[in-house]
Image 1 (cartoon, rainbow, N blue to C red):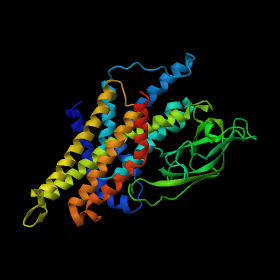
Image 2 (cartoon, one colour; image 1 turned 90 degrees about the vertical axis):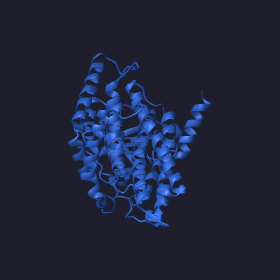
Image 3 (spheres, rainbow, N blue to C red; image 1 turned 135 degrees about the horizontal axis):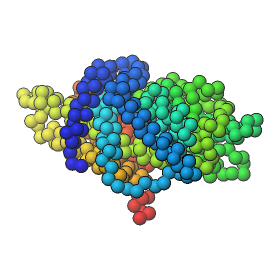
Image 4 (tube, rainbow, N blue to C red; image 1 turned 45 degrees about the horizontal axis):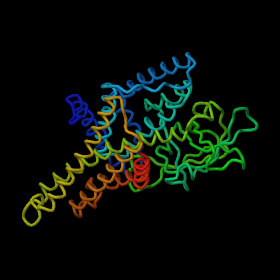
Amino acid sequence: MIEWSEMHLQIRDAVRRFVETEVKPHIEALEHGDTPPYEILRKMVKTFGLGDMAKMRFASDIARQQKREAAGATEEPKKERGPSPERGMEVAMQMIPIIELCHYSPGMVTALGVSMGLTSAAIMSRGTIAQKEKWALPLLTLEKIGAWAITEPGSGSDAFGGMKSTARRDPQEKDGYVLNGSKTFITNGPYADTIVFICKLDEGAGHDVKDRKVLSFILDKGMPGLTQSKPLRKMGLHSSPTGELFLADVKVGKERLIGETEQAPSRSGAKDTFTMERTGVAAMALGIVEQCCKLCIDYARTRVQFGKPIGEFQLIQLKLAKMEVARMNIQNLVFRQIELASEGKSMSLAEASACKLYSAQAAMDVCLESVQLFGGNGYMAEYQVEQLCRDAKVLQIYGGTDEIQISQIARSLLAQ
């Protein structure tokens, strides 16, 4: 894929009109007024039929799972790779709203992606039919808000090694568990209706903590012992509520353990989720960079210094040229994802890490140069480049820091 198709452009224009009408006028409230983004996002989902498409995919997935279970199969067979134009269009339909929303509100993309994407995917990948119908479907349609809780105050990049949250078998309830622990930096945490809580099974002193099973449980807002904090103050992504979760002897039954088995591969499932999150960063970075380019070009044409537009100065032209190179490179990474999907393929974890590493760094570089190009105005909240610069920084941190991406890429190369 080397360019957007006519259909892609028609979808893009429709989404762009929605963002200009429904998002742009509310940026002040979303950024500085503690207004949650969910009602606007639900309106977008309804406007473009994203919920209806999710229901169709869901029904198809459930039908396949029912067929497998009727045949006595425990796992879905590996799909043979082959051309899939429908999947390519589906990925494009996911990417385009991300790009357009990031022109004004990258935080809304994070809130949307964690709910409809990461949280629902954790349930859809390993959950039972009952779990998918009860908890995943309302997330896929954004009827319910979801949170994926893995990060802890002391763990940081060492998500599994530093994990202290525990599940112990409840001696008073057959097939029951008691959950304890805390999570931080949880997107949608303050408002989440459904939470996927990742923890380690406490099997006693005879089992080394680092080797304990990792389990995932589905929690509901308001459960006894579960506390969801107020939104945390942070540098950027103000339109994406971030919070802490505290669990004190939260009792759950086996029906809330994803897959209803302790044998479910939660570590590999989490890695699949990281791959999804990392590839999504390219689309976010593209939206941010596109908007920076637009704002800087307009400013370079109209801002007059020393008697002429600053766009006539070579140093300003150098900044604009480098921004355009970054935009083209990131766009090609987005095109690659769509092309791979059309061929029935996807990025490996290492390739997704490389995609995220470059896109995040390029977006941050462009944003810093944009602020510099605007000079003093660029430092003011009145000019949008200030917000985009704050928002872009987190792309180098969440879903794995730049340093973690480098390690993942290098390990993959050395293992070849």
